[in-house]
Length: 294
Image (cartoon, helix red, strand yellow):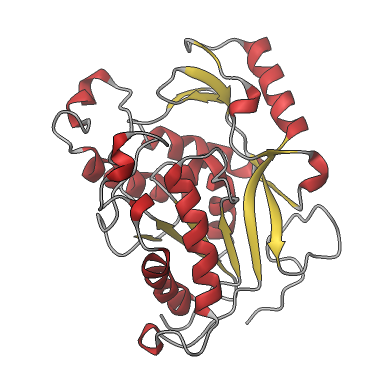
């Protein structure tokens, strides 16, 4: 890729919809500002549970056609966010959704959980050396909440960042590139508490209310390095979440997954900086804070 924009952001996620729930407003913000926003999704999400009854036939225990359908949902969501560079790790279907931790799908040789980390990382290195991101966003070491594909996405992203900078690693993948800043998604405890307070006050049409401690990546407020004010992009994020219709039901400022338990739809998105130098003021309000365009 030639004539790259001055600011370049790479996000690595496990399944379609993870990117919108975690980073939809952030992606819309930077895309609208002219940054190159690149999304790499590691699986097609074939093992997801389907919410709309009329689409139940797509489920893995029936037609097993959910993966291609979710590719379409992802494309629609990215159109809402203004993101034009979205890819699947190693190409669509290279790695299959592993299902939740402890299920038999974890043992399939083609599932992402069983992938060789360096082999999968090489696919990501190729992307890194093409788009040369200054900033990488992915999950923490627990994948936010222990899903095997999220844990593996973390491992692959972090390993790829190491390998991308090594001159000796696979010269056929392009010139070495060092990523300046790596962030992990997180949720400040105070923000989660306020969101659930609004949920209980408002009341929603879901079957119940999720437990705040079940949300992925909840941390103490002091651990948060960056906060992106996504309020100007709330409509775009909400529309993108609606595009993931097999996985997400949206009710105003709240949403539910297949468990039909409501949780707040957060448009302020938060991050922990784990590699790189933070900007002068904390929490940062720009993931590129402190960087010189290159």
